[in-house]
Each structure stands twice: as C-alpha cells, then as structure tokens.
Image 1 (cartoon, helix red, strand yellow):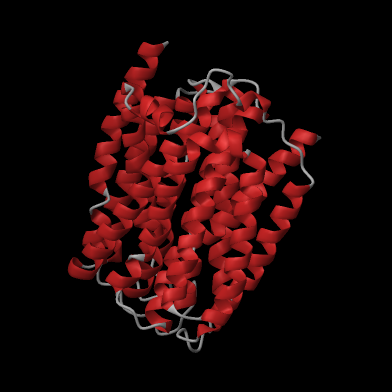
Image 2 (tube, one colour):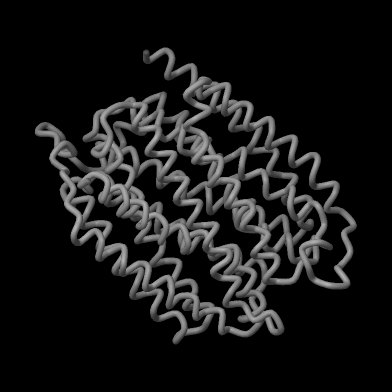
Length: 406
C-alpha cells in the first residue's frame, strides 16, 4: 500500500501541474480579451513557463537525488499553491507572466522528481513503461479537467470579464492538498544514490553527448513542439477560424486533451502486442492524415447563428482527435531511454528531457503564434506537418540505436 500511496501522490501532483501548465492556451485567449494584449505578446506566455523549466531543470536535475524527490515535490506544490492564491488579487498580464514563471520553476522540480520516482516504484522495463504511460495519461486527464474548469469561470455574456481568475482559488486548494498527501507518504530513495556518482552538470553533459541520447532528445524536442503548437493555439483557432464563442472554444479544446489521455492510458494494451517503433510510426501516419483531411473542412466556416454543439462545424470535433494519435509518442520514447539507464542516472536524464521539452514547447508555441498572426490559423496548423516528418526520421534513428545497444 505504501507504493500505491506514492503512485497516487505522484499522480495528483501531476494533475495540479497539468491543469496549470496547459491552461496557457486558455489564458492566451482570455488575456487577449481581458487585458487587451496582442497575439504575439500573449504567445510569449509560453516562454515564461518553458524557459524557467529549461533553466531550472538544467541546474537542479543532476543534484535532485541529494535534494530528495519527495521534498522537491512538496516545495513545488506549496510554491504553486501560494502563487495561484494571489492571482485573483493581482488581475493583470504582468501577474500572468509571474504566475507562469512560478509554474515553470515548480514543474521543473516536479517533472524530474516524478520521472525519477517511477524507477523507484517499478521493478522492470514493462512496469516502467506501464507506469510512465499511466502517469502521463493522468497528466492529460488533468489537462482535460483544466479546460472545463476554466470554462466554468468564463463569463459567457462578457468574455473580457476578469472574474475567470477566480479559478485559481480552486487550483491553489488542489496544490495544497497534493502537498499534504506527500507530507504523509514515505518514499524509499536509497536506490537513487550511487556511491561513485558525482552529481552535477558533468553528469548531464556525459549523458547528453552519447549518440542515443542525441537522437532521443531531438525526438522529445520535436514531439513537444507539435503538442504545444497545437494545444496552445487550438482555443484561438476555434475562436477565430471556426468562430466558436470563447467558452465553447475552450471546451472544444478538451477533446484534444481527452484524446491524449485515452491514447496514453490505452497505449499499454497495444504495446503489449506490437513493437514500439511500428506503433509510433502508425501514429504519425494517422496524425498526418488527420491534418490533411480536417483543415480543408475548417476553411470558409461562417459564424453560428446560435452557439450550440449541434451547429458547431465538424472540424471542431475532428482536428482535436490528433491528440489520440500523438498521445503514446512522448511517454514511450521517455521510457525507452530511461529503461536503458541505471537508476542513479534517471534524474540527470530526466533533466535533459525537461530542458529539451521546454525548448521545444517554447519554439513551437512562438512560431505557431507568429504564423497565426501573420498568415492565419490554417497556414499555422498546416506547418505542423514539418516537425511530424522530422520526428519520423528521429524515431527511425532511435530504433536503430536501441537495437544496436541490445
């Protein structure tokens, strides 16, 4: 039961940060309306969380075993609970920047600690892959809940009303609840300590220059680029291209999160019968086909006479389904690389994962925002096909490297 409680604590911690991290698309839409900022300025919110994630992870990841995974997660949750509680009072775009900065710093600690803890809570590669997919699936359930939670606080008659910031009271309470659960949950971290290990930047550098790590990190960068480019700008795409009302635009994006959650929770079953490489290639083919089939349906959509789901364009339901097919890619490649390393290297490698994921997220969101502003939503989303092709190449190389390593 002790491991079960620790798994529950990791899951709840992930839910908190899932709801906060992936609210950025919703917050971009609401900031444009409530605070009067431009798309380009609002798009920079992604950098306010991703750059702190990258920098913090790079600094603390290799030292995390000495800090303690459990203590790191408690500290991150308390920081986030306090930051969220302040948002309804501050009610400004500069406060949003500060909020996402805190989210980035907190998530850097949580991601390294959570991923490293998976190795302590499982016994073999199959168990590691299963728990990784489950935890990432729970993360996406948090993202799904975030869209609906935020939409409940949006004023349907006046979307510019800043009362939507009251949602942060709820998020603050969940963060403090997760911290309290960790306070009463023990975690055996002895295996994370290696007698001859010298934690530090050198350990991360040593891992980063290995050929298999180079290919893997490129895969992680490209995946997060795609996910954040679509997930962050989908609410704005729904509002400006499909002409859905603000609340419906946010709610429709929850289909994307639901698809990722279902895809990750169900990936374990499929991967028990088929190798990870052909499975992920199939996912990429399906993603590409969905983009090519759906975006033409979104062209020329006219505003609805009456806002309801029955009258919503079919593209509002089809495009978010790309999440179902992209879902398994990230946890599978993470599990592949971590399972190949000793447990005392997991924190350092997770730090590299977080750094390159954060950079990919920032780059993807910024470029998509730039294209959206200059060329329109259709062109911005069509450009997702470029990293999809690139990630197919990196997956091929990763498969070849892992097979050669035995």
